[in-house]
Length: 219
Image 1: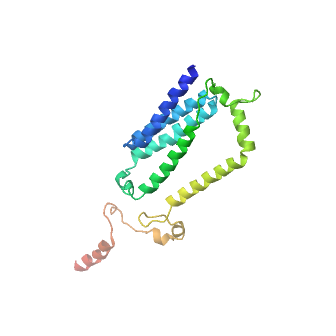
Image 2 (image 1 turned 30 degrees about the horizontal axis):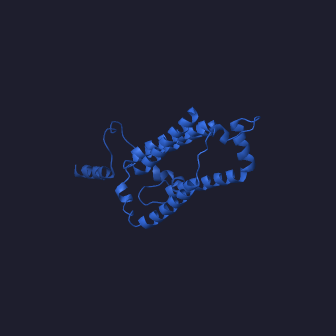
Image 3 (image 1 turned 90 degrees about the vertical axis):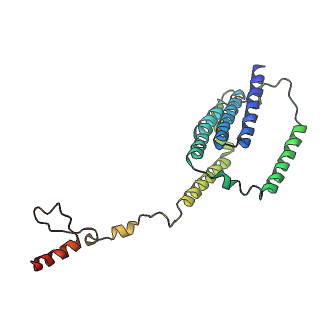
């Protein structure tokens, strides 16, 4: 009974925070509600007996992804008004996709029934001789090995694409040319000046050196 009550409480908070992520006008508030949604989803994993997934969800998504989003939104000066300019252009497509999703959710809700005495831990059975973490690792690296490697490849391609888009050639900033630096000679970088004793405080320029013989000839 206690586990069922906790399940509905965490599920209600999860749904409410997910709705606030979409409807909140302030992007910082949206990220904070997203963190709250992740924490409640981790609590549901704990109730279902998947404590390893709950720990990974909190560490990876809450501790890394959501906090990264928060710092990016707070530190970057994003013009959200410019991002909303194309809302009316893509509104028909968005409404069509939303209508299709609502129809699918409605068809699912029609055939949904509540089990009278369902225990949450029985929803995810694990073998007696394996722990929860061992069972997940066994499934990932045996039955779903190809899908796991495919996801890793997609993440690698996304990372390489982000690096390539970031390091494109731009005319604004000046870039370092290693070959031209290595090809420079000593005469191009170093100038030898013979200075007399006591003349170190005076700045010697080409104009000054040319003017000094004129003074001597004038005397």
